[in-house]
Length: 91
Image (cartoon, rainbow, N blue to C red; front, side, top):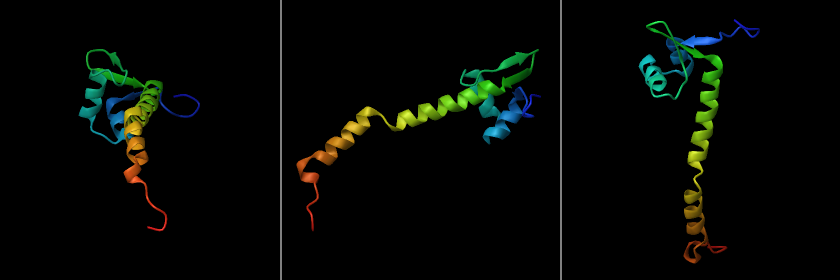
């Protein structure tokens, strides 16, 4: 353990608990390369704490940018600025 008391690596079960998801889903994410992991021996998989933290940052950024696609913004802006869509004052 380091100074903060956190483990340097987590087991799949620990990651599943931290992320509030099933272990099978964590295994799928590791197998798909979304979460970097270290295989120890024939069966043991460890996920470095920093790799998990980086995955969470990257995933949050990916989801944030996916919600703000320029084409979506342009479409919404075009809808709002069309002459027939403007509200009249007092109406």
